[in-house]
Length: 161
Image 1 (tube, one colour):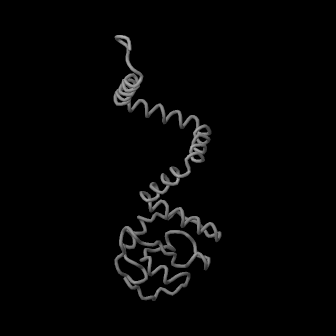
Image 2 (cartoon, rainbow, N blue to C red):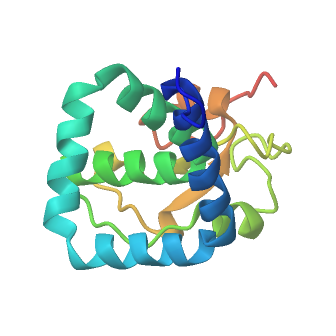
Image 3 (cartoon, rainbow, N blue to C red):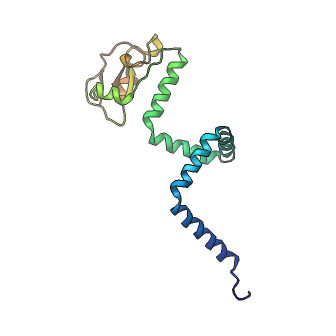
């Protein structure tokens, strides 16, 4: 190799280091430009995202699964609204955390405290019996109590917690 020339590998490493330094200095500006582009080109971003998901199905599934584990309340709310839509029930704005606070974290069936991470939002009048998905018709319950109650209107069940 001639004097003063850089090998290909060293050149790539130098370029990578220069790009990394530029990004650390201009991080906020780069992020802002990207946000602006995405908001101005939603159709292009949708197509690009769809193409990436079809080319990387395993990574896409893993990403969704990871997001779902971090956002359990959002997923549970979405599933509850879906179930209500399936039976053509009225769907109100139900905030799981507000319901938990309203009910002071106690199961409405057995009146014992529930685990703040693992609890069900029970429909007092079940969706299957033309109940509505609204704050007045939902209450906190243990998963076991709720599943044992099923779609009955009887709240006097024994909870084995």
